[in-house]
Image 1 (tube, rainbow, N blue to C red):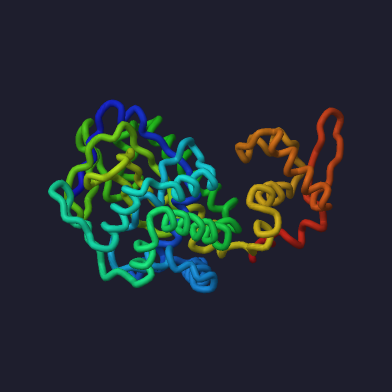
Image 2 (image 1 turned 90 degrees about the vertical axis):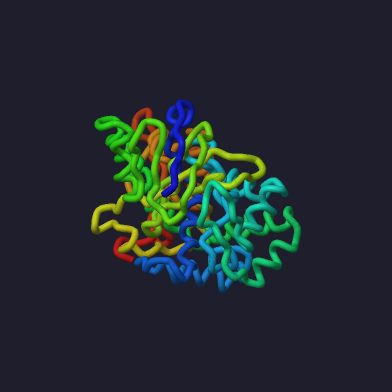
Length: 341
């Protein structure tokens, strides 16, 4: 049993966030021999990306026999939805002491008094090589490989995955609003409960106590049913607030991420993730204001991307009284995934 202490500041700063890197890390966990089966072709897609692009660093971390994944690979989201570039920068610039410490935990395991159960397995040669390259090179290489996994595996499906994460957070917020924070935890994950106001319990083979950290961030993920705990359970350099990466509730049966195969990656690879997302949302005519609200982007940012898409012949632009409406063109249809693919 793990215990999370919840003092006043921690409860006041408990929040939800969407993290592209957390989703990427969760997808990479499918590489583990212990990973539960997961549909939609995701296992093959992740393995192929790591193998074909020779991503030995992330492959060694997530294919290792141990249970521990370094916490620095999941930075604290700074807002309700983290930017991928900001998260990758945080990983690439991880402090040398913390990175060395967490790689050592991964390779050797670290026995400690307040938490038991963290232990390394037999370290792959690629992981040992990564640790020997020096902290800065290791951090930059891991960030670069995570970026490749994102672009190859996650980005093509991001509009669908992101919509599921948003729907999950909305549902959790409704439970809290109607029944209180304590009622939310068991629905978040079966291993969680809040028996008293001052702590949260996690049923786990790990044992110990996580001290209050001034906040708790809850990050939904989509690949499997594992609850990932990102917390300083052992004394570590550069202490951070704890996070729980929990499995989002399944979507409607017809849209479950177990059932939906990743869409064709051509669109994000050609256009970039943001323009691909906007283009996919223009199956009906929309204004820049509407797109900005739907995708949490500034109107000026939407206008910039739509200008590029319009000049490329991928969107049409018509004026309706005092509004300008954009819609994807017939030329864009060849790039967009077709329903049922």
